[in-house]
Length: 205
Image 1 (cartoon, rainbow, N blue to C red):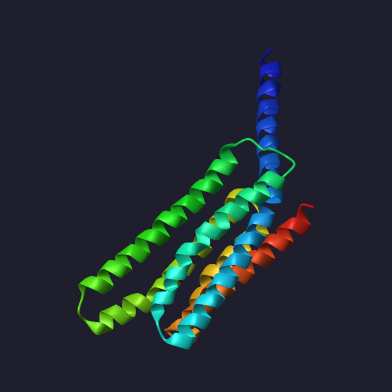
Image 2: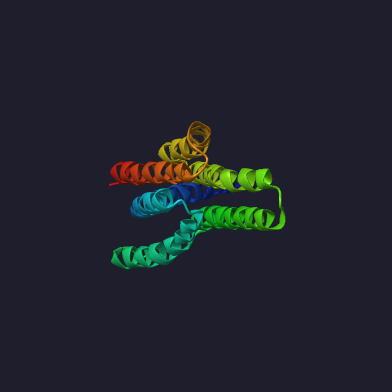
């Protein structure tokens, strides 16, 4: 009787493990196209902001970034409607969703604090330091969120992409200029994200 109970517990654990692994594969298979979408949009927006900022010398062109979610979320919904398989929410999808929601909250908070600091202080050196470090802070957070997503999904491609985006983007920040050239950090992140989507799609096709 005791042996039967032990086997039942082992079978239950195996079933749970198999279910979680299948959920991870389903999420990866489904999310590949979203990585490609957001990677393409991030690359395009960063280049548009760079060209306008470089040609006019005005940093206010960064307000174009607010149009990114306005363009991305409707396109994401359109891709979701074209998906033949309807997937229910599970613990893995909630974890990955929570990771990116946390990234958005932290990134927006950093941007707001930097804007407030720049508007309150009268020290030009502080204004320059705060303004030029914002892109590096967001890229580091972006890479961290991507790497943690890769850990949650047990996918080495996304893990490597996260480390490459965060640490590689930070290294790129120290190697380029401090003005409009910052946009190349997001260009770099967008290209990495797009390639990640392609590799994940090939991995689970």
